[in-house]
Image (cartoon, rainbow, N blue to C red; front, side, top):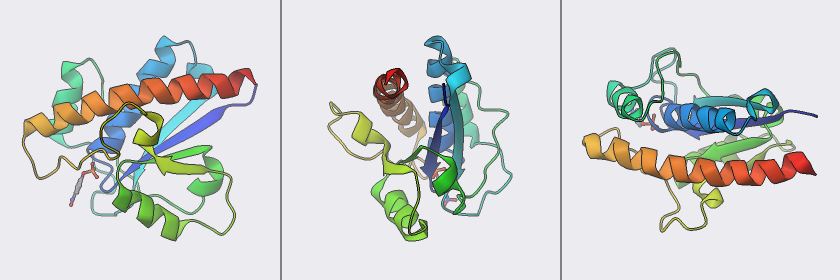
Length: 160
Ligand code: 4NP
């Protein structure tokens, strides 16, 4: 069985995409899919390269049992477009930046993460960086919901 690879992308790779990375990884483990799914996260920006996730994101995730402590920020590269089956942008600005960076031909499925959450009333995971702690809990709510739906989708792909 070939592996499915997933890259979560936000702006800084210190708040939303590391959160999605850890949530998705654990949910994949819970479904017994850890050995067939590769997960990573990256940012379109380069301000935080090598930095751990934002303290507020780490704390909010820890409250729900997710461990972000080992993650370090990196920037998206053109090679990612041929290495990952799915590249999932948190907001439209991330998606637009990724579209500009994309090589002419690539194998990835580029979309918004919330495209996989059809019941979500919004299409974007909002940037919590300049807001309060409730923004981080909201990110987790949205990401948990979308990761469940994304895993449903990927399970159907694996079975094909
Ligand atoms: P993220 O949040 O894209 O979810 O990691 C941000 C982190 C840092 C900045 C902006 C957004 N920043 O401007 O440094």
